[in-house]
Length: 371
Image 1 (cartoon, helix red, strand yellow):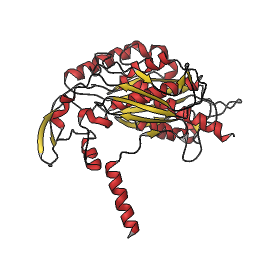
Image 2: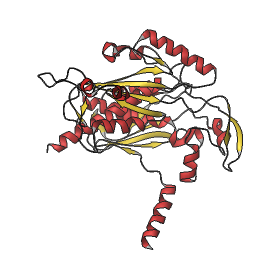
Image 3: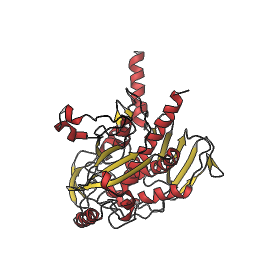
Image 4: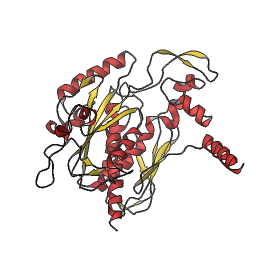
């Protein structure tokens, strides 16, 4: 009877409590806040002391993610200015928790009053209601992609901690429009030269025009972000449950709207024979090819780590649709508010941030294993 009561109690607690707000083992981020609440923010725990921070660079990373930055993203106007409250003194980290907040200033909650008692297709509305018995319908509340602003702040600090390790993400596909060049042939300095964040100017122009045409239809489109991590030392990652690529996969799949993750040769590798797919060694331990994607046996091998992240079309379309309400009745509705017609341009810094958090965590884990 005691066991049954314990399970019953666990069920009641789970009904009201939202878990899973912390990411990382040693370099950790606890994020808080909702899309239309007073602020979003976080607490970074485990950042080593003495790291000299470029606060302007952290804000620059946030500016890359913020809404309203171009004609092909949501027109919500937020300054997304980060304020730090702890863990930094005279420009350096103190080793104590780093607390920060990003205040919301341009909420239009009335844009969501029409979905107070109904559920938007392919959103978290229905499952939130069923799991927690209550939801913040304003912009999706905690399920909103606005939560990722906190990740970008933490990732910007992680990037500075990583030093020589370089992380570059870019848009490689919008709909069926794909960048055909290999990443080795691209100039990463051009990623920020256009609103799509595609480093090939010709392809970027076509992608931008396509996104604008989708927006005019009141519809949305998905895409792919490619991320390349360079100068990674050998030995990051653990060989069983904490494989480096497994943690990168978890990090990417935790981002809103992500539907797929592949690293190295990915799904294309299944078309090859083992004799073709194997990466042959050079005398210095590098490999002649890099189909492994810089990770072997869950551990970094010193080669470039590269992976793709697939994002679905944004679920909110500004068209009429049919859905159900809380009583299970079919109702007619139409999307309202300010939304991205394609999420991938603004998701580039989020992918980089999550990759940085994983690399920072594994760097500290590797150091702790040597003690």
